[in-house]
Image 1 (cartoon, rainbow, N blue to C red):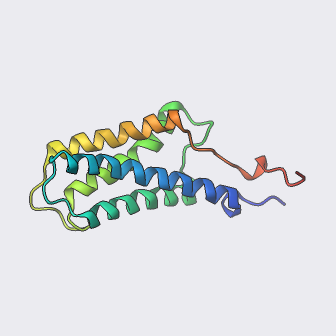
Image 2: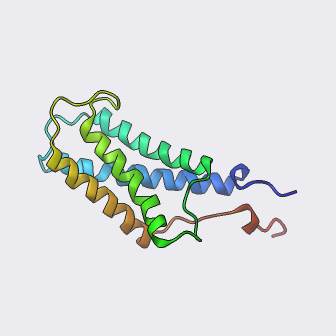
Amino acid sequence: MTKPDYVTVPYWREVLDRAGRNAVQTVIPVIVAAQLGSVAGLDPVNVLIAAALAALVTVVKAAAGITAGPSSSLVCRLADRALPAAAATLLTFITIDGTSVAPVIDWRAAGIATVAAALGAVAQAYVSPAVVVRWSDVDLAA
């Protein structure tokens, strides 16, 4: 009897690697926008909430088995990487604490940072692709 992928240490190591990458891809465009003065009054807690949400989305997708694998089409794999980072970045700009809508939203800065997060995720998919480990690939005899 073989174990399902989600009970192996290499599988969760890979999921945590992807979650960390997604969190970074979410935070970098927001920090750059704040440093350039495009965003006034951006709460650091909100940035951390967005990073945590991006990581959580990655973990939930992996646990639910809806992560694009190596056999998926290129468009699906790139969307799998770009959409969570873009959504979490956009959430950073339109919410105050992760739940309440901000009274004033800078849509231009939000759009630029969201596109930057998506492009950063796609670029990282090419430069440093995540390693996909499946239980069937693990050689226990070695």
